[in-house]
Length: 310
Ligand code: CP
Ligand code: NVA
Image 1: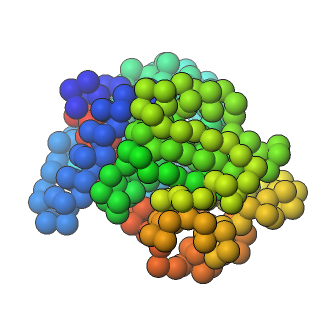
Image 2: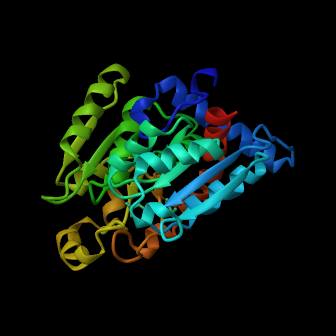
């Protein structure tokens, strides 16, 4: 925990496997405390600013509630309401906010904006989703998998669909934690080649296998976890029709999941489009843990904020 104080979280590759494992363990402990009604308020008197340039349900609510439970305060800063949305520079915004706040979370489009904010800010900056990465989600995801499977190392996660921010962060996180990750998607929608190379480099040390394939059947074969996400992420809405056509053979449904282990877990970061990327039967079926997963955003981010900001 000591080494995390004051750090940013832009993507999981900034953190060692030990640091990620520490955050997952800490999230599980804070979850227990909360369920037992035990107070844990290491952030009394501290404030985090939450900058949103895209919509959110889970991220906003879990950061606001999490900060409140830790004894601190969270400010919701929508792009429509702050001067950043009218052209004030990221550098000025970061330096001004650093004079008031103890931490900043930003959800935006280009990852360079998250990096710029972190460069100019003197307080921890947390990536609450960029086009490149969604590390907070993936902390909660691996926590959820660990809680249900009792281990992470040696498991196989199949991600079916768009090679987007979720695919990237799941790959990096899996590589760090020793989870094999197979990504299956159509031509033109592969994960970023640089991220794949980076994940493979990290995986050399942990023994994880990182596979990118066109075949969803190959990806889900003997999988312990099946994960999918929307076909058109925020910012890509106008491509919805083209993407429906491109991804039509990549729906996670009853037929596809037959290839996985019988006790596979189904995860989705949400929001979901039922009958597009996933059939109703799978997402609402007995193997789905989507609401445990959504809940864990709260616990994972409490662990994160406590580690970075106290
Ligand atoms: N999974 C996730 O980040 O959800 P929101 O967009 O609702 O925050
Ligand atoms: N890939 C999705 C995730 C939403 C939480 C998006 O970026 O819109």
